[in-house]
Amino acid sequence: MMTREDEHMDGNQNIFKGFPRGIKEFLENLKFCNTMEAQTENIVEYKRLITEPLGLLYEALLPTVNKISDRLETKKQRCVSSPYTDRRFSPKAPLKEYVYIRFRQYGKDENVPSVYFDMGADYYSYGLWIFKRTPAGMNALRNGIMLSPGKYTSALDTALSAGLAIGGDSYKKDHFPEMPDSPLKSLLNRKQFYIGRDFPVGENIYTAAFADEIAAAFTALGEFLNLLEDETFCL
Image 1: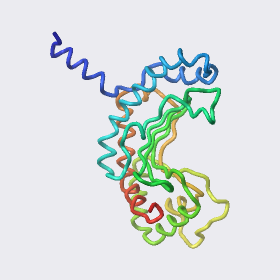
Image 2: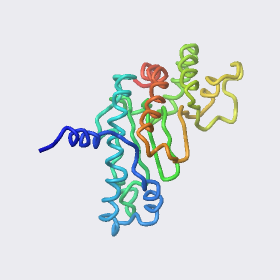
Image 3: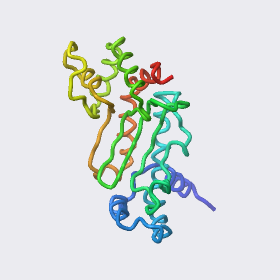
């Protein structure tokens, strides 16, 4: 008969408590043994170290994602990376050597706003990104930002105040010379941009607080995400 203590312990199995020790070493070693011959052995550790805790991290982030937007795809199978690579492009490496969780705007095929978490053996990253960008879509977005710079400045300030940063390749030439230097100008002058953090894998990934860290970033990005979801470039 299961006691209250047993029920409590069993319930804790369904809560993200951090990634297990060994995930970094496993991903590092996978680069050298990711073969069809070793797949059966590798997948056992892959599921224990990656698939299961990644699913719990997804569950931990879901309340925050639902709070910041009701227009993001949240079905697990569409948001969480599977262990297996696309054999068309990786015929000799059957397992992914990186993992991700991606909440993308539902029903969009191009220029899709999203919040994301990615992790490999040496790094992790999270933030806001636009998937499947097109030149026409990005130009339309820049035009939309220039029509309402105050709203975007406010939303961007909220994200940067939370410790996030603007990334992405910049144009060599200033496309907005008449605009005073500012974080918004820096964003506009990038071929593509993201707002987030990139860190070396450290001790924090092994703790439950790692989910709180990512959730706090998603919350800080909510205002900017909502503006992108409203833009005509996404329609």
